[in-house]
Length: 565
Image (cartoon, rainbow, N blue to C red):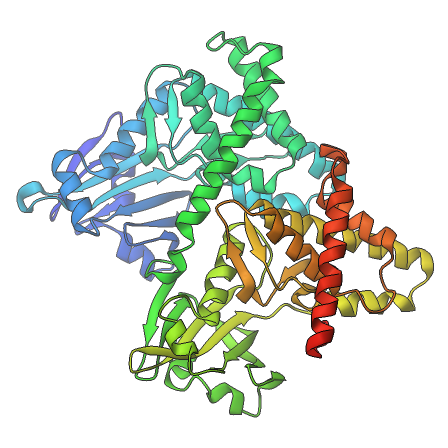
């Protein structure tokens, strides 16, 4: 930071630019409390380790990052290294010196060392007309007209490839390189610009060779491999290779660009994603910024942080209470479960939700829960696991169990409601009222979507043993949602037999009646097996195995006197 002046206020020592001193600091130090009281400071990120505020004053905008020593590990770490604010300030200077656009630091504040390590503050100037790249891609870009949206998407893929190449040529590695740590400015009539932020994970050294470049690209590709098509990822890769080859830092030959390196990058990204998802599957069972453990005299469980505290308290006090209220809409009442629709406050807004009670049907059920997760808890974990893997399912909000003598008895699951939804059976039946051409177009479109969803479910090494038409919802926008996730299981390597069983269960849903033809079923299998990408080899064996498994299921249900759902 050039031309700064030292200022000490209370226990905080500041290094601040002279022109910003009066705006940022008062007689008692940082004016943060004053800005919050006036509504000029808004929290944009919050966690136990740091809070980021956006402060808007007349004529300028800036960000205040408050880094906390929130546990013993952070306190001990600061004994042997500088505070986080000073480290990020140093890295901002190094990144800017190497020609990569980044943040501009206005001030840093560090606690006095007399009493040991303490919190630190970093204040940076706001970048006008910018937004985070992930927000732009998910929220802003879809609002553009189709032609402009396609043009900007292609341009951004090339721009991002050249930007990351510029980083790697400059010897900059960002170990938390995701779109949330990149800002984009897309001014009218100007070329888009990118900026690197959140520099706590940045390391600076010599230009990166292929192994280091590959590992950093894998981190970035985590997000894009789930949300960007292969065409856009290829545009990024070509722009990246072209930019690195031009400066002759790493000799990307044309044969390499289209050969083993992109295949290796995609493979390593997918394996890294699988490890990442496995690691996060237990996050919904812990206390963190997204989830909390809850308990009362009657029940214990887990809840999302944005569930209204009053609604949470009512459910904890009497988990069965909502089923007895007049405003509850009863959807199902069977010996094994009860399902009702309610309206509860979530994140301050009233929303329709689905509340399900899992009954204890055998004296063995409480004892079995000691050896494996209960049906309610499996549904809770599977719901958040699917959402982490970008698979569509209603968000679980709360899971509870009544506890008696240390055993879990009745389970309760609260989830968001899918608006204007119909299950796959109802959707296909509703097509009969349409003309032949429209019916055929809609049916084929949904067959393709269902096949792609099941393929992605299996690609993420998940199986759903109750994958029937009644457990696939189609919402008002035509999007699919997976529900009733008790039968979802994660596999280290999904066996072919489980894939066949899942396909059989879905196929058996349409065994009775003539709503789907053999051509429709073959179309599903073609999309599921990706004929266009992988060829047709082996499809007949898949067909035969699914047909045989379906026949066995039909015969089994006939012997037991059960209908196929």
